[in-house]
Figure 1 (cartoon, rainbow, N blue to C red):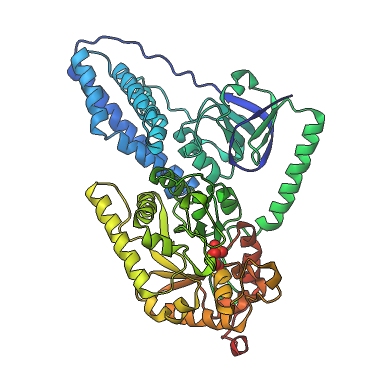
Figure 2 (cartoon, rainbow, N blue to C red):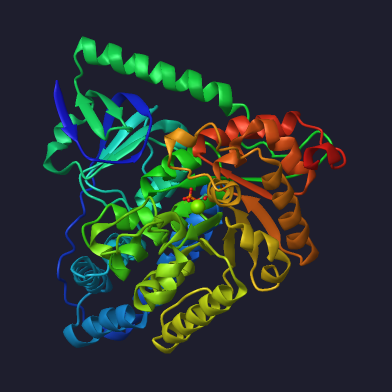
Length: 550
Ligand code: PEP
Ligand code: MG
């Protein structure tokens, strides 16, 4: 048995035979031609034909993996319109008198090399895409058929790398798992594997070789481990792990794809809370409608120095792309109180929970705030991002936040960097002050999300961190339910939506109360989505029960 490790793209266990996709890229010979005009016309015709093929492929892909994921095909179309690329091919044909095949091949290689040495991770990942489009054009020029990889029978697909257009064309029924030598977690291939719910391990490097073809392997997508020729003990263990996973899944699977709608027709959004981009697998697997709270401070907590704009951008973009158009609400950093980061150099305080934390840090250290907002706005061009601000207590804070956001947008616009102009800006309601002025706040923001963990702490004056006070920490306190109702009414009067992202959101004993006062969204840990869906579907809401608020 050989055991190797790579980077896990999607959890799950696969056991089966490996089919190694050998991609012998044929060398294109340098051939001289005499009629350059004819050759230029040949290239142009092939390019147009490639664009048409991609249009068809887009339709197929959109039906299979959704429009947001199929966007990669549109990126390929755009690359085929790229003036630098076209000029490079045309110049080679004209100046060197070479064939269109050769000019396309050399240009594809050199653009790919250029992309792969770029600092920006997104651009680096375009290296595979430019090779992909060049090969497509060459095949058309050679009148070769574009063949999609067609594995025989359910197999574990192994390959040096998989082009996004190949991944998208694979028949999902025939693929148990993907293994690749190269590739990064942010590549479109990885994102597609995740969206298709296929266990995949990438970056296996030289551990993965062509002679694995035909052999049996076990892929543990949870740990990123591949076992080649597994011994009996490993096989038994993995079969057991697979069986347990399948049982668990089956129970809840019956609820996947179903609506979050009560018996009397009341609908609610069920989103997931995450602290890390590695939680995405669980978000998708549990069929969350979106991400209701991404606690971005974990990016800061994991590091020994401030995460750069680039580092943050790539994480936010990755999360937005992985969610493929579903809403992703990212909360700006909530450092301070129980979440201390040494490099922030925060002064010691008598009452840290009532002290220098969250938005208070951001509004006094604007550069830090702007770095995060820039990363968020930039990532907004790649998915459906909303931004949410924690620990709000006043209207003044909200107006100041909006000013900083406007500055960030103006800077991006000036620099020609894409971002979404009207992304939703929301606030957390986690202080009694914010709830009591929610009528005014609702006029300035797009949504509310109630942080019941802090709201309980600040309303009932009970430190949420102190185990001695567990007995007194009561999120069911009447004051909390009344505040929820008040905030929901104020949100709705102003045409805004309201959710709950504190732990109380997952409390099944209150689901009906939440539904009856018109809470529009509940955001809970991924594993709670399906149990909550079950509860919603079993409920009948009826009118608001006044007893809940007395
Ligand atoms: C809350 O306070 O309810 C909340 C969701 O934020 P956190 O738990 O991160 O403070
Ligand atoms: Mg909070």
